Amino acid sequence: MSIIGHYDSEPTAAQHLRGGARIDRHRHHEHQIVYPSSGAAEVHTELGRWIAPADRAVWIPAGCWHEHHFHGPTRFHCVGFTPAGAADRTTPAVITVPPLLRELIIACSDPGELPADELARLRRVLLDRIRRSPDQELQLPAAVDERLRAACALVESDLAIPWSLPALGRRVGASERTLARLFRTEFALTYPQWRTRLRLHHAIQLLAADTSVTAVAHRCGWSSPSAFIDVYRHALGHTPGARTRMTPHR
Image (tube, rainbow, N blue to C red; front, side):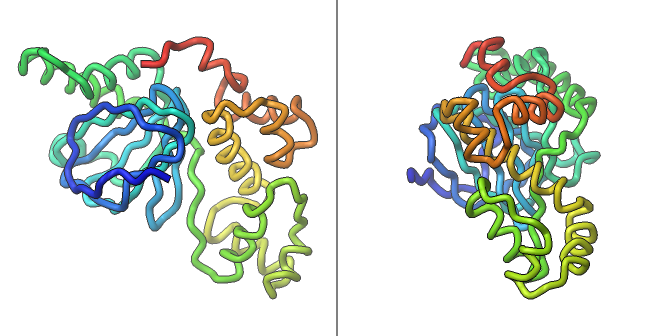
């Protein structure tokens, strides 16, 4: 795995990264929007993990310790904002990136010879569009209870195994009822809801690495490719691979 240098300030940048690259744990004095115009970018914090394919971006608030993991060849863009100018988003979030927001992020992350006053105006429009972009349910919360952490690790170790909640409970030393309660209280999700979100999270990673839809469906535990496609379309608004066909990688 390639390790990109540790740093604590990167207000504006655009770079090409290979699959498996990582940026070590760090934090910024500024808020930051990070966006992969190709591949997928995953942000890890002590609260959980957020993942963005090429039609999503991750908002990271100032002062939040985090690290980046990249899946598939990734063109990575990030733009920073002073905390005073973006005080309304205080927690990490995945947001939708429609075409206008995409082009604004790309332009602001790599402005070239753009005059400072024009860039400042673009950045104001970008921030306005970020504020209006709805949050997406592409977060995997981090478990606190040891039994819940162990159960999550078991499921994630092989998504093709159809773990039932009672079987998980027996393995981690908790009753079915206790484990179900832990999923609800810590994640605000039922076990099936969390498992679907976990499968989607890994599916996005595999698709970014150019894994076939059939292979993704099998490796992530869906009963068939069509079942996977239906869940993916419901969650992201399009079929797997549709965004790759619709947008150029730059």
